[in-house]
Length: 301
Image: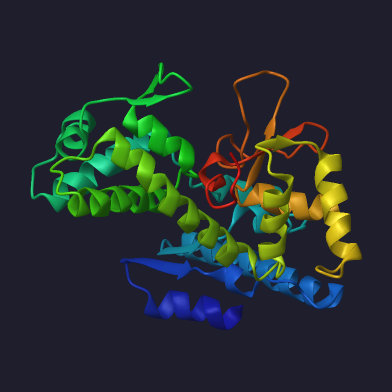
């Protein structure tokens, strides 16, 4: 620490220095032993302690050194340290709501068409027809195109960009100048496959049998199900030697953390996903619901 302090004092001027730590979850995986997992978590804990020390030293000498650590919230929650509450003062949760997403989309659309910044509705209507999607048995349910797209995403900017790109590809193939409600509905198929692939990429390191687990949801073939339904089908996979035995609750928690499933409380019309509420907790006793964006890829109707 003395060496680090000497470097800060002697070599840092009045400029602002940002030290970025990213992709730390690359080494978060299905650890072969509890010792390996403990080692990984200890290294993360040491990193956060070092960050606090750097901030303290730089403040003492009126320097501007700003370490920034990017880490998935589910991994951060696993860190146990007596000083963790003090770190929370510096924690910023990166969350997107509808207003922020619309602002981002308006900006991206304007940049793409070389327009000055426009309000969301104006920018949106340059790409999309001002018509709702009709749904239901008699097509008497109406939904705005943006809302239809949003409910298939996990409220990440890249999800919206991907969905709109799929819409643009279909519109170009059909020689349509603006994206119609039918195109938005048709693009849902490819987007669902994208969301499934994203999930597999994100979870595979910690749950190598993620493909089989997603297949299990296809076997249940219900939008909503109970804990016992999942446990029964999972035990069938174990008995057939398809997957190794794990804690069923831990598997469901992993699926919840990455947005595959959510809770459907007794209060109808509301589903709680990890990205829809601030730091929600998964409830094993409540009805479990598969994310709508995965319906097509998992053949759930």
